[in-house]
Amino acid sequence: MTRAASLAPAIFGAGTLALLLGLWEYLGSGGGVALTSVLPPPSRFISSVAESGFRIGLGSQAAPLAQSIASTFFRVFAGMGIAFVAAIVTGALLSLSKVATWCLTPLLYVLAPIAPIAWIPTAIVVFGISNVTAVFIVFMGVYFILTIATLAEIRRLPEEFTTIAGNLGAGPVDRWFRVVLPAILPGVFTLLRTNFIAAWMAVLVAEMVGLRDGLGAIIMMGRNLFNNELIMFGMAIIGVSGFIVDRLLAMIATRVLWWRI
Amino acid sequence: MLAPPPLQDPAFKVDRLTVTFPGADAGARSPIMDFSLEIARGEITCLLGPSGCGKTTLLRALGGFARAENTGGVLFQGQWLRAPTSDIVMIFQENNLYPWLTVRRNVAFGLPYCEGTREEKRGRVEAMLRHVGLEAAADQYPRELSGGMRQRTAIARALMVDPKVLLLDEPFSALDVALRRRMQELMRAIWASTRTTFVMVTHNVEEAIMVGHRVIVLGGRPMSVLLDERTDAIPKDRYAPETLALQRRIEDLIESRRV
Ligand SMILES: Nc1ncnc2c1ncn2[C@@H]1O[C@H](COP(=O)(O)OP(=O)(O)O)[C@@H](O)[C@H]1O
Ligand SMILES: [Mg+2]
Image (tube, rainbow over all chains, first blue to last red; front, side, top):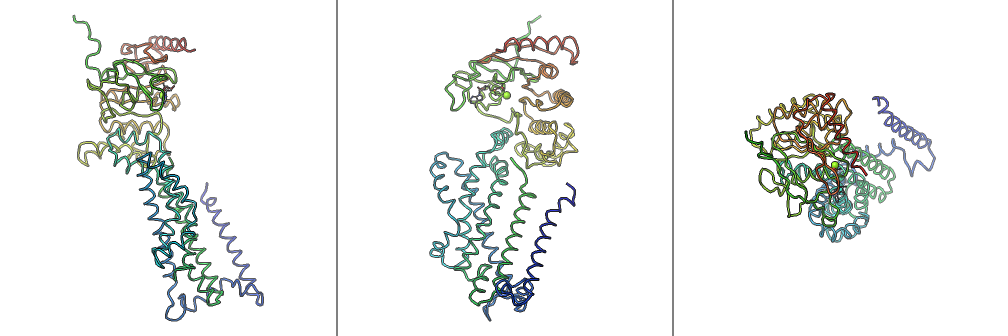
C-alpha cells in the first residue's frame, strides 16, 4: 500500500466527522429550533465552558477540566493495568497445576460475564466513595476475562518453544520470562483492548452514581444544573477521550506487541 | 593388521529402546520397540525412511525428549540419557524461532547459560552470523526471513551453545531445490570447521548421500534398520555413478517395502 492509500481511511473518517459537525452547527445556529437547547452545537457548548475558564462546577467547588480527565484516566488505567498483571500471574500459576485449573475454571467462567457495572453497588458498600471503588470496578470488569485468555494462550503455545529454551540451558524461571511471557502477551493484550470499552463505561457510570469527580460526574452536574451545554461538553470529552485511548491501545498492539504465535 | 573395531567410542548407543507416548496404550502402538543402533561421534549420520515410520520419535529419544521404557534406552557417551541437555541440541521440524526476537537475539538465546565474558560472547555471535551468511539480516525478525534464512538462524543458535551433538529433523524439507543444495553445502562446511556430531533426518535420498558420512534407512513397524551404508568412499558429486547407484538402491528398497 502507498502512503496515500494507507491514509485514505483516516481522511474519509475525519471528513465524515467534520461534515456532521458542520451540519450540527448549521442547524443549531438557525435559532428557534428545539435542537439548540437540547443538543447545543459545539461552538455553543465549548464557548460556554470556556467562559468559566474550563472549570467545572459551582463557585469555590469548581475544578479544572484537566483534573476530571486525569481522575477518570487514572481509574481506568490503574484498574486495567492491575488486572492485566494479576491475570497473567494467576493464569501462569494456574497453568502449573491441572487440578487447580479444573477447580477454578468454572468460577472464572461464571464471574467473567458479569458486567463491570454490576459491581458498582457492592463496591460502593465495601470501599465507600473513593478511587479504590472505581479501580476495583474496572479490575473486576477485565480480570476474569484476561485470566481465561492467559490460560488459553499458554495452552496454545507450540510445545517446541519451551522445549528449545530448556534445551539451550534455560531453567524454569527463564523459560517463563524469556519465552512464555513474551509469547502470550500480544494475545492477552488484544483481549484487554476489546474489554476496554466495558471498563471505560463502568467508570463513567460509577462517577455518575457515586463518585463526585471525573468525566462521568460532569454529565451529572450538567443535569443537576439544567445546563445542557455542560452535558454536551461532557459527552464530547468522553467520546474524544475514549477514542484517543482506543487508538493508543491499538498503537501498542501494532507497534509494541506486534508478533503472532 | 587389526580388524577395525565395530564403532570405537560412539556418541550414541541406542540399546533396546522402547518409546512410550503419554496417554497411548503402553507400547502397543509405539513405532519404536526394542530398537538398537550405534551412532559414531564426530560424523554426519543421515536417517532416511517413509513418513510416520518413527524418525522424529527416534531423534527425540536421542535428544532425551522422549519417554523410554526402562528396559532399555539411549546411552550418550556411555551414560544413560534421562533428560535433555545442552550437549545435544535439537532443531525441530517447525516453530524453531521466537517471533519476537531478531535474528541476532534468536542466535544469542542460549548464551546466558554459557561461559565467557560479555564482549567475547558478542564477538562469537557476530562471527556465527557471518559464518552462516546472516550478518545482513541480523536485525530482522523471523517473519521477514526466507525459509532458508530461518533454518540457518536455528542452526546458528544451536551451534552457539557449542553442543557435542546437533539433531536436525527434516531441516530443509520446505526449501526449493537450489536453496536446499546451498544448505547442504553449508552443513558440510559447518561440519568441516566444527567436527560436531550431526544426526539429520531427511526424506530426500540424494540429500542423505550428499551430506552424510553414513546413511541409515529405517522402516517397518516396529521400526528397524533396513540398510546401513557408509558413504565416505562415494564422491560428493550428485551425478557420479556411485551416487546414482546408491540412490537407486535405497529408493528401490523403500519402494519395495511400501504396502
Ligand atoms: N505423541 C504421540 N502419541 C502417540 N503416538 C505418536 C505420537 N507421536 C508419534 N506417534 C506415533 O509414532 C509414529 C511415528 O511418528 P514420527 O516419529 O513423527 O514419524 P516420522 O518422523 O518418521 O514421520 C506415528 O505414526 C504415530 O503413530
Ligand atoms: Mg517426522
